[in-house]
Image 1 (cartoon, rainbow, N blue to C red):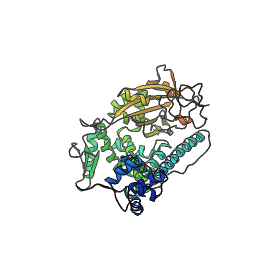
Image 2 (cartoon, rainbow, N blue to C red):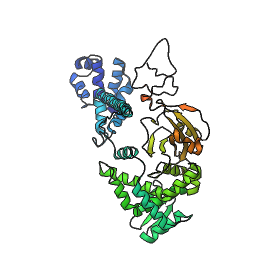
Image 3 (cartoon, rainbow, N blue to C red):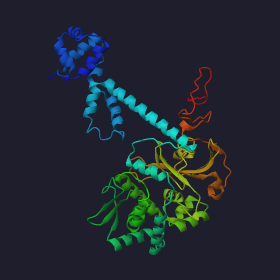
Image 4 (cartoon, rainbow, N blue to C red):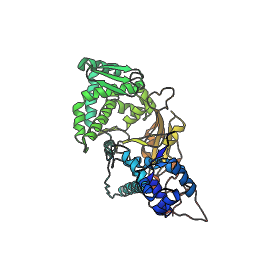
Length: 469
């Protein structure tokens, strides 16, 4: 039977150095020559089964330590080199494998250094937000992906694009769609541009929401999408054509740094234009005021989804015809923030959105139910928050449901103008991100504040594991 061979020279060297042995002393104990041991340590000779057993018996070495790959270190190094700062530095995993095998202590040091870098970057970002909230400007150099640049740029400005609103309102009026906007838009695409919209079954288009075939001039939309999202995809195609000049003009006013960021930004503005086409500004603004901003009534009136109606509320900031300045945030059930939007920019300096006491996190426990809270910040500010889960594309039998949660809110001063602020709700005390929150005795605290030293005391401990002075 063929003898198994293992090349594990660096690990043998670590064992020898840990025991403070010379090559001559270890070779004598193993019954081999010093030159042969030298070749083993340089991976020029294999470590045979007989030598493995000898190492185990003489030095009490765990065989798994010699035979297994440094899988944990390799996974951690992959995490390091997946960072945008280092993306593209390595063509594959081979060099990472060589580093973890030949120099595991070095790879461990790289991982520790990277984690320290990320921790400090996170703390500096939190401190920058704290300084910004106090009126001090602070800029931090950071390597961002194009999608992150687009999100941060759009979130920091009012969510209103006047040129797009005017263009879509005029186009909608020219169509006179009546009750069948979807049918009118499909007919317009076919009549004006020879483009046919078709819905395809899952087995034909299993991994795509939509696909545009330039050769056959057909727009394919997945049947996984709800009728509202299918409508949105059609409206985006129409808006991209009918509102092209307005989209380009608005895009030119936003300082994106790369072509990829501009491409993503154009897509986001097309989505905005689609909402403006499905819910024309003047009609939607008037309906919102009459319904006291009841999102369910608005979605029924305009035949859109809860998410689409809520998103549209954040855009009602036309001069002379403005609505309540709503802000919106969407997260998944792991807490990842997917997007933020707001008529005046999401007020993250005062209302960070990461506080686990917000009703957006509780919404996952009661899918489809609307939760309303009045929250009070550490600085005395208050907000009305409405939270609800929304469903993603239709999942198959063995797939997980794609479910996210929306939080839409406004300053507490506008609460009485909405249907949600009529009830007298007790104030729930929340804070910004835990690192910036100095609220004492919080049961939900996940991290200590960066502004206070920890107050560990062997004689008395508080309700939080992160007590601070």
